[in-house]
Image (tube, rainbow over all chains, first blue to last red; front, side, top):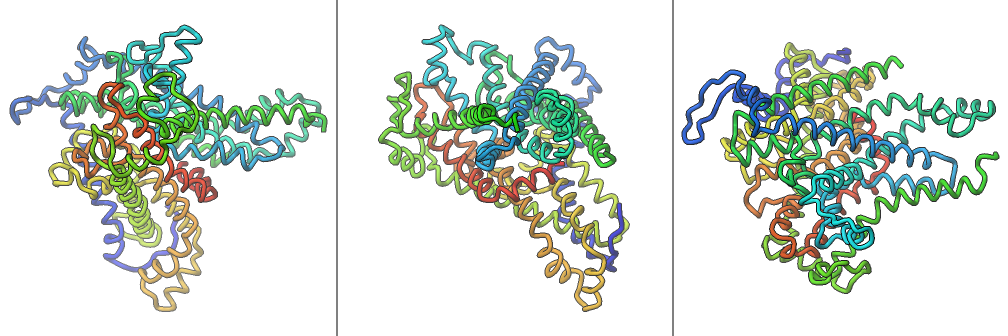
Length: 296
Length: 281
């Protein structure tokens, strides 16, 4: 930690950090420790009794045929990857277009930025409404013009596509803002040099701009995966509730459902701990990247 | 230049308009739905014009709510607003204080505090749902505003942002204020906080949106309707069979949930971009 200026005071700094530390301990450290502890115990649903069971909550997650944990893991990864790929591709394309020297760029940038403010649940509700088999306009068009009997409540593929579209749509603005910022830091002289050398626009993009955007792209890759993994709960809860069956029950939805609805404390805690490890991994990845960016 | 020929430019505009359409059309659908009657929406395909029931639907949503959820939406707007303001202001205050302590004072537990705050980055609500719920219920904070707000106001990113900013404050200013005989808190209140207006504004925009859009947390700890936030209310209005859902009211409520954070982003766009590209990293 770099030293600024040390003001002399004995107790004041403790009072200053106290509010933050109290909340950190009560609402973060204590519950997290509880989650780790509970993951080693089995709760008796009829009484307050708990039995130490070691790793069996974890083992049950992966071996118990009713737990569907592995499936949930795989579907979460596929879901997060689909969102990342779809959303980042579209955003990068739009950012490159909006970065060109044309009129009305301020207008375009504003129009593509403001959806950042749309809540994840609201994005879910909007897409649900368009694709609802009874009232949705798109669902109606799919059925009457294309002969597709669209029903995301019965068909897993439909459900998965709808969730992916809603979540990617929600992420568009976020990615757009960061790609715009990245593009603005690409030195114009480099691009001009390439123009003089006669490089085609497509080659210029892939060989110069895309390379210089790599730090932004990598950062967004991590952030989109985090979003897909951890922040899509509202969309799943609002649109499919994990269905049809348990086919779209991603990890964060499952941990909530097993804990809050099924009251399986041990199993839910074990899932929490696994998620914690995942978050730690992703955070480390993110900070590695920041360190590298500084030495760039 | 050849490459910026008219055709190329038109194509660029065309692509951007497609992008805007992807964003606007879904929102237009819900706006249109909020101006029709339930029967019109259910008789698929729904009409796509702006119907005559716009004001009526919003009035009903705001002051009556849907039949299956008798809570008027204005109460939910109030709750969402209290939660968003509480989270953003609370976060700014406790982060300013913590960053002030960490940057300007040397005390034995400084590193410990810094790392404790840092670790919270790795403990989102999702990974500690049940035990946090239990803490809240043990403290009697279910269905209270403090329960909605307090666990959300810890923020490692906010502390880092202020720390980063405080580190750029020249030593001379601190020394001068000490020579003038002002106490540490006077220095904080009269010099440091006013100097930090830009990062405070940036953080406020990001955190207001974050607070307004919280979903999992209020879903866990609010069971009484008078504490429902807008997003929880929307979800509750949609439970039940499709035919019983009053879509026009749900859509009006959805639009009402969407407007406040959008206004904040549009009005404070500069601070928003700065806040996003600086706090999130």
